[in-house]
Image 1 (cartoon, rainbow, N blue to C red):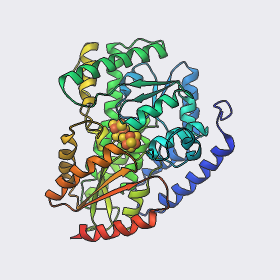
Image 2 (cartoon, rainbow, N blue to C red):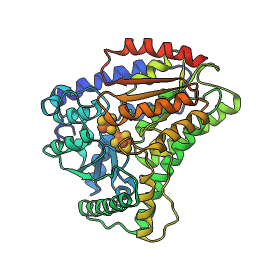
Image 3 (tube, helix red, strand yellow):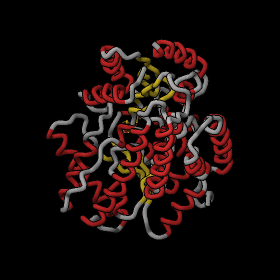
Image 4 (tube, helix red, strand yellow):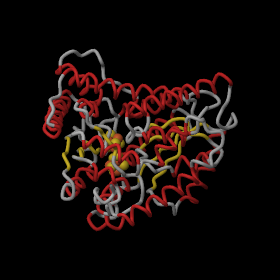
Length: 418
Ligand code: BJ8
């Protein structure tokens, strides 16, 4: 199968060995994990195995696999034609030498990562994809897609940068054009019936993740932040129906824990909200440091977290046009830092900090990510005004600065303890 996909076999074996060790060290060393996390451990162990086999099988049946890098891509339309939407590998410092041959060194790690994965032939998801969908969010991504397109067909969706009525009109036009692209590549028409089904599947996945998120408000918290993040990361790869069922099973177990007053750690440790750039699999660096320094992460204000799960598509539309409008409106609420102004995001961070009883907010931006690094200034001002301790972190996927950030985070947690 790997040969058929054109993977770099030796490099891929090395990658799996590194990931396996990191997962064992970071995840399997946690204590008191919910039993239902076993499913997610299994998914991770098969992320470069059974899951790829499943994708190849669905492709043999004529269904398409669409690879994405952003939560602005309407998954509902891909699901409507029986396709599979997968988030592509972008969370590890792998293939970086290859990436730096085509990108400036001072490019954000997420962009260098997806380019490196492709150029080094290490991401089976991109190899299995019939189409890659990019978007005009930040400058780094949109220019990198022009290069990526030389190696893999990349269709780019234009995302406006503001949220006026004129921008909504532009965005609606893009969603309609995306629908046409999906129809063309799949050879299937999107109808009110299949789109309604696609909306339901995507919404149910979000509902399950919302349920998981709400359970993390409990005191004591029934699940670690690392595990909460992992489930959100897996949401981008797994079969949506099976994933939704498994998240709900996990939530049933957490409900029981809460009823019995069982927490994953001892009560009274600082509760931290992490906000900022998305943490794509296997980017666990900052939550790992936080949770091995005597605190717990209770929520992620991120596209791998709240930002991509909090809004549903209205399910009341009966016509295709009505459903498209519902999709347009739902996605247009995503408060990515690529928008200006973006006050919704700051408001949302303050709401989350309150709802989750956060003792501190850590703002995380990937180094060289201009949108989040710059927006951190406004977030810092608002969070400090609310009297909540705040720490700003800017880092890449490398491990060299782990010690430095551990010291900074430990000092911050002292303040968060009050
Ligand atoms: S909707 S956050 S998933 S664009 S970290 S590549 S912004 S320089 S990932 Fe994102 Fe969509 Fe927005 Fe969400 Fe650029 Fe920043 Fe890198 Fe980023």
